Length: 345
Ligand SMILES: Nc1nc2c(ncn2[C@@H]2O[C@H](COP(=O)(O)OP(=O)(O)OP(=O)(O)O)[C@@H](O)[C@H]2O)c(=O)[nH]1
Image (cartoon, rainbow, N blue to C red; front, side, top):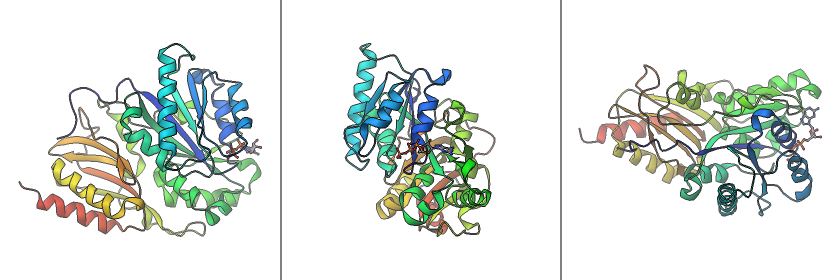
């Protein structure tokens, strides 16, 4: 049985990850955000390609705590960079060398696959000692988003991993284009509830509190787990639109029979071994012999499971959301049901 009596998430600094394709409005949003009174104790980490000075100067005007990742491109090598940058920020904060901060925003390069960054925040022991992922926000440009979804792989993946999507530039996009993009986003990740944001004007609350903050959580856990878990069926079975080929789908699965931790983790291990790259994001609440255990992961990397103090609500079923690439709901359901049956009583 995972977990301990200590709250494993308490006291950790929340980290918000801002992604979005090139020119989608990330810097506009982050530089407005850090000027908001509610965000005056924030450190910003920027990762970008080329022209490093520009965005840096822009955001640096409004916050003293800014760190640039040396690596221009977020790929697997970013893990060490990010780990070092966050540890360094934490050490400087403790030594009083930077203004005290209680939140970190990471702005990634537009061409990035956010998966390695999320994995670092979920599972890197050194990073997770002091930080926790509070949410991943993806910006989609209403003018160019459709073309970007058709031509590149990153935008769909950025949407798939998101806790929330902000649709920018709807002031200069035809309303039909905005609606078409909304539909495409909903097909990929119905839990991310795309919201319109103009010129980076957003209430900081829209980006915060999206992650799991405490093992003593109730309602907040349900919010973190998201809309697909409250509903029935699989989002992927909706009608597919022109902008998205349906290869990335959200599968919301429910299981009535409790699992043992060994049976559940064996199934996840098998799934990640066989289909890790296609398990874009997994999150949910598992009934482990009656106890609620929250799991979340990206591809083959999972956050240590968190045993909650109590069930958030009356529903005691295992509820899991898998955002996958070309995996059928039945494949995952059959595997999990088989291990549940195979476990010793
Ligand atoms: N009309 C309009 N323009 C916007 C909006 N949001 C951002 N922009 C503009 O879009 C351009 C790109 O915005 P940035 O914030 O630099 O985008 P970015 O995602 O940081 O770009 P990269 O760093 O290149 O990936 C800028 O000229 C912004 O002023 C919006 O809601 N409406």
